[in-house]
Amino acid sequence: MKAVITVIGKDTVGILAKVSDACAQASVNIVEVTQSVLQDMFAMIMLVEIDKSTVGLDELRDNLDKVGEATNTKIHVMHEDIFNSMHKI
Amino acid sequence: MLETKDILETINMIDNENLDVRTITMGISLLDCLDEDIDKACTKVYDKICRSAGDLVKTGEDIEHEYGIPIIHKRISVTPIGMVAAPCQSKNVVKFAYALDKAAKELGVNFIGGYSALVQKGFASGDYALIESIPQALSETDFVCSSVNIGSTKAGINMDAVKMMGKTVKRAAELTADRNCIGAAKLVVFCNAPEDNPFMAGAFHGVGEADTVINVGVSGPGVVRAALAKSGEGKDITEIADLVKRTAFKITRMGQLVAKEASKRLCVPFGIVDLSLAPTPAVGDSVAYILEEMGLETCGCHGTTAALALLNDAVKKGGVMASSHVGGLSGAFIPVSEDAGMIAAAKSGRLDITKLESMTAVCSVGLDMIVVPGDISAEKISAIIADEAAIGMVNTKTTAVRLIPAIGKKAGEMLEFGGLLGAGPVMPVREGSPDVFINRGGRIPAPLQALKN
Image (cartoon, chains in turn brown, purple):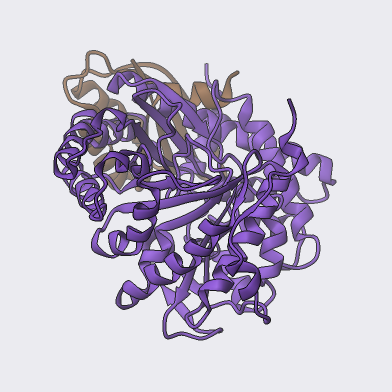
């Protein structure tokens, strides 16, 4: 199963590293990353494989919430299917 | 790969525009629980509900966490208890309400609907006793919701039942006067009631339904309003309708996903997705604000009915392609106390009960969550029900009445419910007595629209 991690907030040094680190610690494989910076606002979207994750989705979400707090960003973890069903026919 | 803007749009809908799945409702048939002994029947009812819906709340929460979509309520609807009570010949029908309430508490669901009777053409055994027991049942239980279908396009309107429901609504409010008349807020009087509606207080599990079924009600007025605010400026009405359709499609797809997933995990057939725009008192999550975003100064001014008709139709057109089975009420709800924009319009006097009545001819339900003065006569409530049922009967649509007589309060005062039910200003009703008309009893014959064969 794939999930989408989105990170939205003010651009600071090391956001990508911290989020990737949290993923690596949970054996969550990053499949794809896109990021854009619009007028200081940072938006990063990661597609990740969570089948081999060593932690549950809730725990991964909690861990990433902590990263979000530390970097002053808002991080969401959502199932890929939501976006597929909402935006693709 | 998914588009960045699509992903951000979804996140924004959930974070800032109150997008949610309003309810996963499990319909459960109680037709195998009939028993002449009411206590045995109640035990069977309790056991069947607990057995069928044991995993409902947990499954809802799991989906919520896994997918990251808020699912606000988990509910149960059951076969109209009027039928289940038929063999009992007992005056103590209210025992069924206790059994339903106990099951709801055991399972942790938010509401259980189906303390209901279908009497559009006449009273069958069990129906009369059930209707008489509704006020007591609603005052002595916490989660039980009740509905009575008093008319349909096929059958006409049962005016004996209409007369009875005026008294029942008033009594339900009186018995719960110390709790903001909450009893009346849990009671809906229908014409053309749908049998697969997941929304409360009018949900029940129709007799033509499978043994158990999963129905999902979506929400999302905030999302539609935001879409219009973002890109509606300067657009003509055709483009506005298209914008609503596109947004409704996205909202419904999410509901469909949740419904299919819940159905798979619970091993219960998927019934329908109800494409309703259901407002909440949260600022921004209002159907009235959508109408105002279309260009009305205030909800209730001239033009409101046309704007609502457009909205209701566009929601259906957008939603119907997004789901494999659509049903329930499907359209825009206009519950006054649950909608911040409606509350404001009613408070300012620009939205009155007669304008609301005309709006119900084009919205998905009817006069919903309207607070009326506590000294209103039962006959007047019956007359409001009859008017509303006539609109439903003639237009072959569902209409409903959920009036709350605010005991001890007069027009202009406020009645506060809290939570999703919100707060409503007491709205004045029209002068003049309908007493003789209501007390005649009998049936309004089915209209010509019924003769389609």
